[in-house]
Length: 248
Image 1 (cartoon, rainbow, N blue to C red):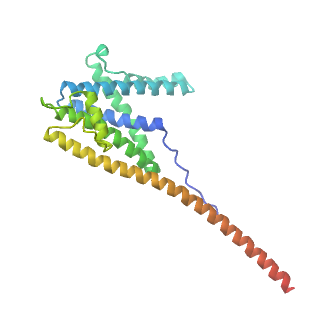
Image 2 (image 1 turned 30 degrees about the horizontal axis):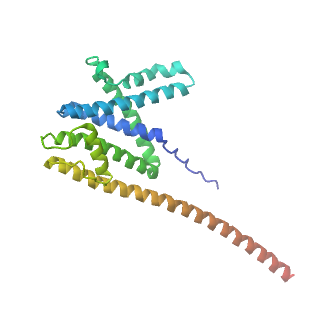
Image 3 (image 1 turned 90 degrees about the horizontal axis):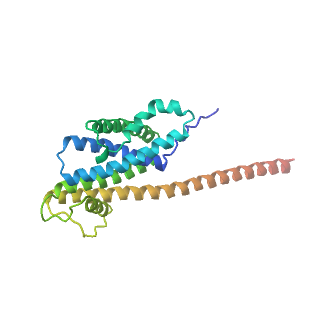
């Protein structure tokens, strides 16, 4: 009776994980821009992150164009990805076209998110690691955005986008140097959320790494057990042959 093994899911590459993180960020950032009144510093931070994401999307576009066997067939739909990768720089603002580019970027992002969800249901173990990485990066970025929005008082010491990103990084990693800290109640609530989330995420990551080594040991144990069972069967056959000969 033949058995059919399920195909092993292809693991996500580092590039695919990065694209997933950026895609989820694009969707959430667009909603924040449209629904939340932001101050100039927060918009500046979002614009800087947006420019970096667009540059990576451009890299992804040209890499896929280079690898495409039929360049013209790829460009029939790939031009949408090219438009979605145009950054909204001050010297490149074309009125409402900026919003169109952002919407195209969001549509492009939904494709990456859908592909990841399919992968997650196929391979939950490795998908969990991708979720941890995704959550860590998004919490750091949006934690920085939130703290800039919350710390709009004169005595605040988190005043620039770089201050906010640095504070969010040391907070979510639970390092907490103390050089930057929130002074408002809302800012402290954001800090508490980041610290609790950081502990949970790094705990999950530690569990994944430990499970990875345990699985390797378990696989080695299973292989050793198979070899031992095979040797026992061979010994049993030899004993049976010896008994038959002695019986004659």
